[in-house]
Image (cartoon, rainbow, N blue to C red):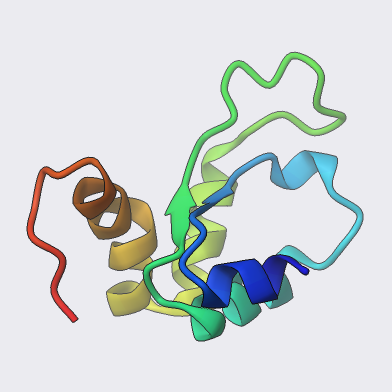
Length: 90
């Protein structure tokens, strides 16, 4: 269902990696492939309810999974475009 929503332009916050029961790298790749503009990274801070709180490894996981160019979109460009800070480039 989430992939279908992403394909239609629904934005997805990639966060809370310590609270999920699925393989995060696979989900990141599938969502990015469904729509490169959909993912926006978040830290989930202060992570007070998470079994595994946010760590800098979550940030690195995005880069390692997607590569630098795609990670740039997820870590900055998608959110900046969503909030009107930059013009979306397709």
